[in-house]
Length: 152
Image (cartoon, rainbow, N blue to C red; front, side):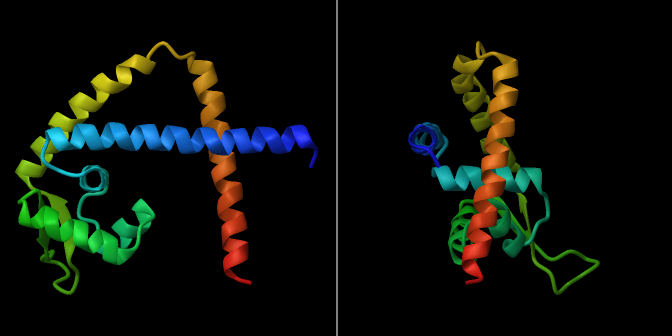
C-alpha cells in the first residue's frame, strides 16, 4: 500500500470517528429533551423498525452485547416505553414492542431529528449515493477482516 493510500485511509477512519462523535452528541442532546438516553432512543427506533423482536435479535441488530441491551430494555420497560410480551402462538418466546408512550416519544424525537438533519439537505444526492456505496463496501470489508481474525 502506498503512502498516499495509507494517509487517505487514516483520514477516512478519522472522519468516521468525527461523524460518529457528532452524531452521538446530537442524539444525546436530542434524547435528553425527551427523557431518554441516546442508546435508549436508538433502541426505541430499532423496536419500531422490527416490532415484536426478541432480545437476542435486537442486540445483534444493534451490534451490542445482550447484557447491555437487556439493561436498556429493563429501563425502558420501567419507564413504560417498551412492553415485554409473550405471543399467544408461542408462550416460550418473549418479544419486545413499543408502548403507546414509547411510540409518542419516538415520534417526537423523529420530528426533532429531521429538523436537526435539515441542515444537510443541500448535499448533492449523487455524492450521497457514492458515499453510501463506499461506506457499505468499507463496512463489509471490515466485517470480513473482523470475522477472519475471530477465527484465528
